[in-house]
Length: 285
Image 1 (cartoon, one colour):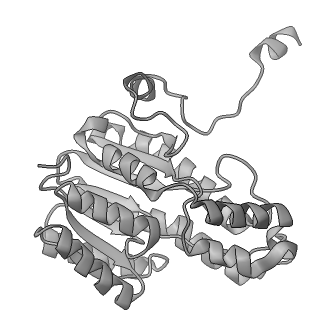
Image 2 (image 1 turned 30 degrees about the vertical axis):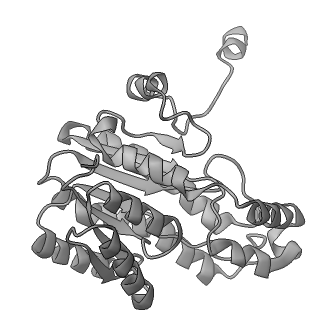
């Protein structure tokens, strides 16, 4: 019996990469999985994998998260097909245009914001009413490079990812009286199809430093996706009850440690986006 036994989990971007690893891991922990992604072929392959893992009632759904009408239809389908939903994982994402911000195509920039950020907003907007009807309501959003530090030449991606963090914090406060735990994960440099975009862009657009780092990470295997999976399962499970509004690094934060979990629950500003100032300096001046 797994920690997600009998729970119903919806995962966007779950047909490939980190999303698929999350879907597989959640299925192994006893959950019924519904994956939403655009490519129907990848979805069917993912469904076959899930059915090999468990005999739970797994589903797939072809969806463009950047289109709200499609997201709303998906939520309606889930309401009829699944009844209540216990957990939502927003993992769909693209790099978008690579290059200096004043030189990239604005249409591509807009498209990345729509998929990464608005896709997360749309899913939360449409699925929160479904989650309200269940116990242990969990939302896990995925951030990434550029949310915690500058990510030049990848501004569409970085801007969308830091917006997800603040949106997550806002939602956690807005729904604090409704029993929601809403958190955000930084998965680290997991090797996915996104990095092929960096290789294709080359040093002039992606910067030589990031291109070389990408090559190095690919050669070394990068951050194992199991780290993001472990944190996701924790945040979807009852073990994380009371942790909400946090931005947690899967590879770098000691989130398995009880003292760290205690601080996540107790310290309002810990693991959040805040301006750091020198209070001593301001008192002196």
